[in-house]
Amino acid sequence: MRLGVVILAAGLGKRMRSALPKVLHPLAGKPLLAHVLDTAEAICAERIVTVYGHGGDQVRTSLADTGCLWVEQAEQLGTGHAVIQAMPQVADMDRVLILYGDVPLISSETLRRLLQAAADTDLGILTADVPDPAGYGRILRDRRGQIIGIVEEKDATLEQRAVAEINTGILVADRSRLDGWLARIDNDNVQGEYYLTDVTALAAAEGVEVASTRPGRLAEVAGVNDRVQLAALERDYQRHAAEDLMRSGVTLADPARFDLRGVLHADPDVVIDINCVFEGVVRLSSGARIGPNCLLRDCSIGPDTHVLANSVIEGASVGAHARIGPFARLRPDTRLADHTHVGNFVEIKKTSLGAGSKANHLTYLGDAEIGAGVNVGAGTITCNYDGANKSVTRIEDGAFIGSNTALVAPVRVGAGATIGAGSVIARDTPADQLTLTRAPQRTIPGWTRPRKRPVA
Image (cartoon, rainbow, N blue to C red; front, side):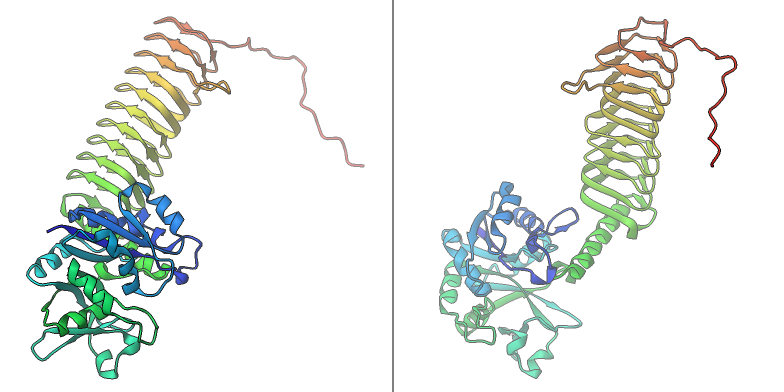
């Protein structure tokens, strides 16, 4: 069966009170609509069509690389009208699944169950039992328990409003039958809109058995209408991500203070302290320890490496048994070998640090190639930028760089060389020798410190 997915994402989102289209507001680091698109791809949909409206150009630009087709709903005339706009794009599909751009946590598992439940009939809908159904359309069933329709709350009687089973809006239908039902819906209701929900009553009236199933958890079908609801879904997402990690063998100091905004591959016996944020794709090897208040983005941390508090690591690769921080910053294209130390207020960019090398205090290393067993003293900087071009500093194995040294690139420090503290090194230095640049120390006899003049 060829499956097409139609995602409705044309709503204005007035309650968000934002210039940003609602479906572009981020949850776990990516737009709401991106979550739904990813799920549609996960169930192997042959074609994905997104119906957009308000802020359409911004939505299309932000998600231009998703590969979905885009259809504009110029007038906001209801969900049924929105689906009608998309149907020509799925005319060659066998079945059509309807999803929503502001319902981000729907899972591929739940959708597969819905597809399976409806495999032998022309219509299947996803329903849910909720403690407070206010605001939702209610599922209407006959005495045999068969679904015969859906009534929106504004059009419901008091008896119908007492029903706890609600319509989530998610449905799958035979494409040709759906075409016919959509052609017959009207806007004779309180809202004056074309309701997609009317399809259910039309199907039931034709004797179609309407299949149904329920989500694994209610958060899967929760929509986002304002920032309060967005925050609630954010915490639900993070809580479940944290639980999955802990079940896989990761220790979280406090699951409520953990934020995943990408993909985290963590081996067993990883320990993560409070208030850590993981973005992009992060890999933590067994025994790695991440201290509190750290940000890790698109990086890998080797076995038994300890990242201390308040460190930022982005686009870097760190080996085994290393020690990073506290208050360290590793920028993109940084490569630290095993047993390296990078201490407090050290920034490293586009630099390789060989096995056992150390930069423990107040240092900047950029565009550098540093060998094994090198000690970089406090206050050292590589002067890698001349205002137009960047050049490389090379420090060979076993060198010792004294504190407060400036290495003016391009420059090479030979193996085993020692650079005296306070030096400015602008030319290559020989191996196994002491090199320093330092003005003679002078004492001025009889000099006195200036004093403030008396106040008149």
